[in-house]
Length: 157
Image (tube, rainbow, N blue to C red; front, side, top):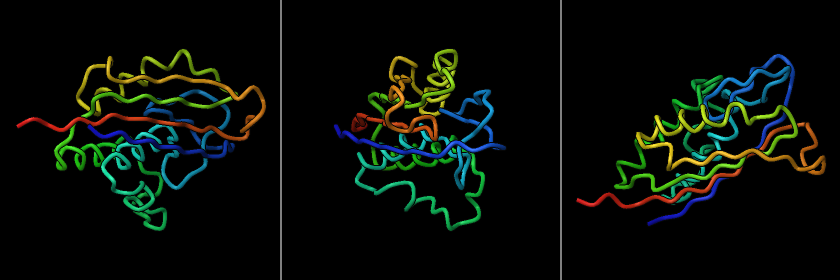
């Protein structure tokens, strides 16, 4: 078994759509980034890559490469999952915490879990997505952050 942790944060800006765990979340601002800036998926990818001791997504998908401009993070996650499988691992479980003052994310959590479970080809019982605020202390509404922890299990032959 291997454990990995990932963290990401992006600034909220006007004229961008808000995408979290592959789900479009209606809101007046979206996350600024080279790709679609899906902080939850970015943290998840970093957790998987960390468990495999392969660095982070900046190394694999550099923001200096124009082919990743406005990239769908769920497609990038698919590439990371492919690497995970090539290395002989499968997902035991994933636990993601999204940190946002606004918008309220509770109505979208089950869809987010489903999106991630479909990407990994596993049941939603292996995917936890939670949302919390920082009570106006940390990001204070200027951005959204996410933490992710994964447990990878070696594929038995």
